[in-house]
Image (cartoon, rainbow, N blue to C red):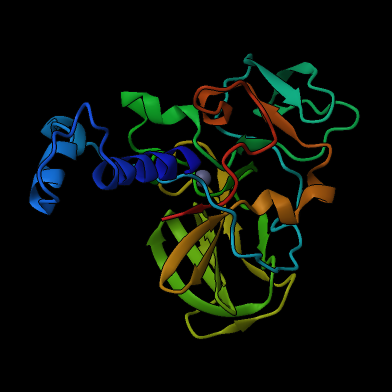
Length: 269
Ligand SMILES: [Zn+2]
């Protein structure tokens, strides 16, 4: 932004104070000055889309708990003899996970398995992954790897404002000007208009709208007619401290390595 502003100031200064070399005397003719100072316009360059710089979110305040009441684990997606590489968020150490009877073999210290991070993740690059729920090239939420049928808890109290197809079968709960989306569910236990309390079971996880069972957990803030994608991880850091993330494209940030710290911050639509 600073460079952009400097460019504007410089352009304006050219208009107001053209050098003698580039601006022959025009007798104070404003039109003449403008004509001289105006740079050649390349339409192709002018028409390029402008990418806004990330802005900090407007100080969101939420008190959340983990949205799942059960172990974070994969089932019925991997083959019986598959082996997967996952990275410990804190130590950056990779672990090799075997699968037994369709479930990961837990290792000491394992807590939550994060199947998709919030932010500009790499999966958007692949044509075969066009159905992956990305918005503006970013994944707006966190995906918890979890078996189908695991109880999904209201991470915050609020009012149910949507039950239906959004990110697979989804529930949206509104609290103040935040909307929390629970996606890819198997079933619902609440209806639109119902008030839920924090920790209440609102449905069961599943794989609706996707191929592998996981919970899509998304937070949006609406403010001044703007929608903000909020990184849920910032509210769950203590619980996610020992989380494990797999070495898959959905966890690689574009132009960056497999990382936990979100490089994008919250983003505005
Ligand atoms: Zn997701």
